Image (cartoon, rainbow, N blue to C red; front, side, top):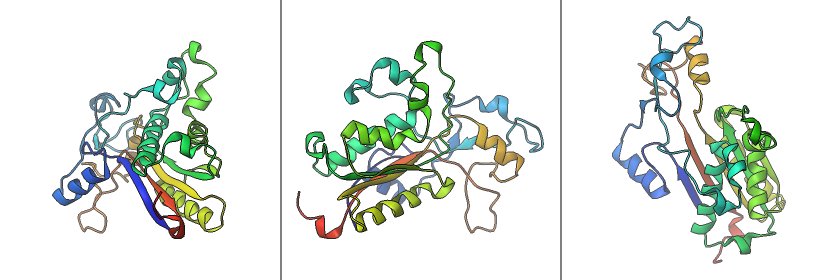
Amino acid sequence: IAIVSMACRLPGNVSTPEELWNLLQSGKDTTTDVPKDRWDAGKLYHPDPSVDGKSYCSRGSFLDSIHSYDASFFGISPREAQAMDPAQHLMLELVWEGFERAGYTKDKLSGSTTGVFVGVSNNGASTAVPPDLKGHSITGSASATISGRLSYTFNLQGPSMTIDTACSSSLVATHLACNALRQGECNMALAGGISLLLTPGIHIEFSRLRGISPDGRCRAFSEDTEGTGFSEGAAIVLLKRLSDAGPL
C-alpha cells in the first residue's frame, strides 16, 4: 500500500504535513487552556472529582479555527451550513487538499471507485438546531453522515463508511481502507479521522473516573503519569495499491 497524499489540521496551528513535521522537531507542547469558543472552563472547574457536572481539568489541545469555511465552495447552502457539524466541513477541506496535493481534480475523480473510510470520535456536535433549520439537523450533525457527504460531494463510487472505535477510530479506518484496496473493492481510498472537543462532556466524565490528567497532558509510560489528555485533530491519507501508485 502506498500513501500518495496527505492533509491535516492539528493543534499548534498546524495546517500541513510539513508544519506537523516542524512541530515534532521543535518538541513544542500544544496543550492550552480551553478556548472561550468551546465552553466556559472557569465555571466548570472544581478540584473535587466527585462533584457532579464539574471537571478538575481546564486544559487540552485545540485547533485554532473550526468554524470558518466557504460552504458555497462545496455547493452547500447557507441554511444547511448553519446546521453542519464543524467536523463535516473540516473533512471536506482536508479531502479537497489531499486530492489537490496528489494532482487530482474533482472532474477526474468523479465516478471513480474511490473508497472513503473516516474515523470519528468525540465530535460532541449538538442535534438541537433552530426551527428554521429543521430538515438539516440529522445530515448536519450525525457522525455517520460524514463519509457519505464526502462520497457525495466528490461523486466517489467506492465503499463509504464512518467508524467509531473511540481512540483507535483512525487506525481502524486505515486498516479497513487497506483491506478494501487489497480485495479490489476500490482502486483508491481515503482514510483518516477527526476528533473535536465541542462540549465539556468528556472532561466531566473522565474527571469523575479520575482518568484525565489535571494539566491536560498525557504522559504515556511515564512514572509521573496522572491520566490521559484530550486533543482535537483531523487528518487524511490517500492510499493506493503500490502497483497502481505510479505517475498520474
